[in-house]
Length: 540
Length: 61
Image (cartoon, rainbow over all chains, first blue to last red; front, side):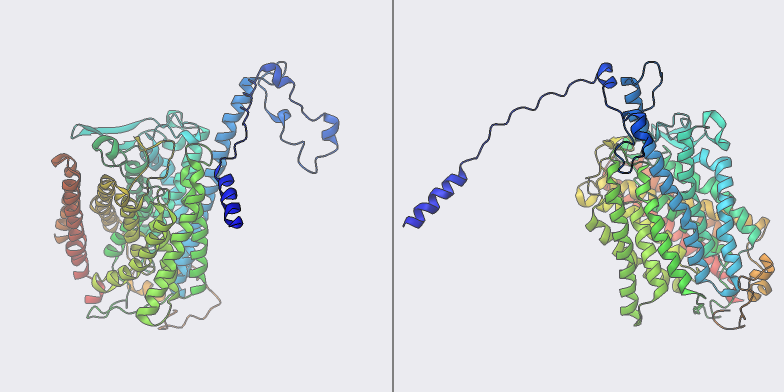
């Protein structure tokens, strides 16, 4: 009885809110010019002794002043804050761009490893050369078409010179078609620090799309034809679609103009980069035709195995590393406008990538009895490709689902492309980038959870990108229109341009050169001069 | 010839997707039109263009 009373008393005491009087915190004193003068700064004598613990470095003494006679003013302080934010975003975006540039090495290793040793030099040289060819095409005209009318990029200081978008009126609305400022990075005031950062970051994305095509056409593509084709793609095909999605073009405006969610949303480029690259790769593989010996006279495919799985998986790891530039870097900043979501974007990227890798490995294991290494690598890449568009808009659970579906999808697609379509794609570029790029675009319209907030709006529509599963079917329609544009316009444009190059230069090397291996006939030197290549073996 | 036809079918599918913006204001209506447009482009790519390319493929000779 006593115990019960005691328990009741204790419970009652606990139930009574234990309030303590909270005194209101004093209002912060306003910053005044006089107050700034009194902020303690380390003396010259103290600094001369060194600063082992870092407490004397980075103080009021390090704020740049505009007039030394006046000393530190409120204006100086505010300007410094603004510059710090932009500086953080510049550095973030540039470093992310450097990571994406390093992906070229990953692609080179994956593609070369999946090809035969007799074509190693040729495959590596295509991956090496595409960087420079694409860069020059993009500098010449591509960047202008893509970003010349993007308007303000707030995270990078506004980029005011990029303000001329050519638009037509269709269905009573303005349809942005291409940008007009930025040719040679000098025209119309584009010799600008912010514009340079945008150029670098966008250029390495464009080059990723270009290098995808070298995989599907490997081991039989004439080097000269490859150069011309890559130039055209870097100058026109890629920039045009990228403008529609990212440069203020009509796809981005589907939300503001037609009420379709937030317009076509492609955070880091499943569609813009990978589907454009993958569909161009399909066009190239169709036009060039399969390698000699890939299909029997009855159309049955023969396996032509690559010469170095170590290169392939090392390349996959490099690509996965570079993807941390691709996706989180697409915030174009780490400070302001919701950019702190970079942590979430990075985690989504790693989750989807490995979900894809594991799903592909398990699929192959169950279907063929062994965990195929090259398809596991392709599964990783498929997961990364698929999460590229949704990475900024979805949660970790959605990322794993998107990645796992991509891992299985790439296996099914590789089989379909080879067995049903009879298209020879030595590295699986069409399936990894084309099919999963489209899947990533559609997945955004399904899984975007409406929790992201990049400065309060996206593509000029207030609020967060929200997919069908979270209540906005209009977003899915916008994504599907993007996918239809990729299939119905980008593929056609790529096909026509590649066909034109075929008529002018001819894509395919001679049968003799192909059988011998392209290293000597096309490049003049073997990739592995001290190796004995056995004719007729899989590796040769 | 079949390649040209395939390219035209692809463009037609793209045009239908685009026209969905003007033909109806209903989200479901647009969804259906866009899906039909995408299906048309796939027919153009797989059934027309690719078949034409495979018809002259090197392994058939």
